[in-house]
Amino acid sequence: MNTPARSGGDAPVPAPEQVRAWLREIARGTHGARALDESAALGLWSALLDDRLPEAVVGAVLVAYRFKGESVVELDALRRAAHARAAALAPVDRPLVVLPCYNGARRLANLTLLTALALRATGFAVLMHGVRRDPGRLATAEVVAAAGLPLAESMAQADAALASERLVFLPLDVWCPALSRLLARRAELGVRNSGHTVCKLLSPGESPQGREPLLLVPVTHAEYVPRATTLLADGRSRALVFRGIDGEPALYPHTARTVHVVSPSGVREQVLTPRESPDPAVDLDAAADARATARWSDRLITSGRALPHLTAQLVDLAIAQFDPTGEPHA
Image 1 (cartoon, rainbow, N blue to C red):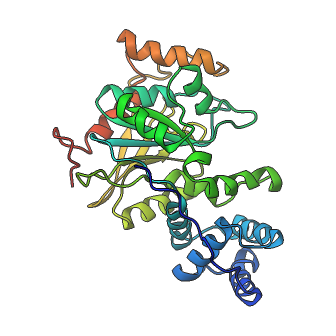
Image 2: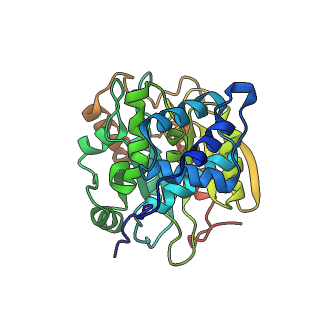
């Protein structure tokens, strides 16, 4: 049974003096701005996600954070506010890997579906979530649809697909409409906002056995790697954090990449290196459309051909976070 998404309900519109207090902290420019404390940040993001702020204030907040940058506390507050407004996903009976798909392919081939299929082939259930499309890019949702794989239009469909297919793409507008609306502000403002970072840190929660899902977190900008790893480590999450291909949850196949392994015991770095460069397994044209990308991804999995070496190593690293019974290693 699905729990409906929660929101601010009848929460009041923040008083003007409260709004001014928030803006006095975060909107003083690059050098004068200060981070909000936990309570203030949670209040601000909750009001913003619940559409309880005037449009002018919303624009001011998003642009202020674009200049100031978010502290780990402020990012965690937005993540907590988004989780409180996201619909619940039914627990699954096996280890779950979560792939956030918010960037799409722009300059390189989209290897996200291949990564998801390879993870499923090892026994994981795979939750992909993200945007349905992104102008000028090949969105992973389009590749999933071209492959004939489940793209959920409700939480019930997502639950059923994870149970039967062990793989589903859950659009953010279905899972957390409030956060989806925040991401859509990019079309109005022309620049990304804090929601584009936090959407990659969402987690559906534990299974009945208490297993934490494993998050694959593809950071687009290098300065967010330490913030993401700190936030997730403080929350005792399990995650693999890395610079993704065009910000997607797949590794660039032709050069060594560092993966930050986050577990309840801390954070460590693992360097993955291809056997040869360029990797001959990646014979997919960078301009391939959704149908060609879906066919290529399926063919690699079903034919027994070698995976791109870094993709195979990433899957092995995911497996290493769980013991043979499916219980996470500490």
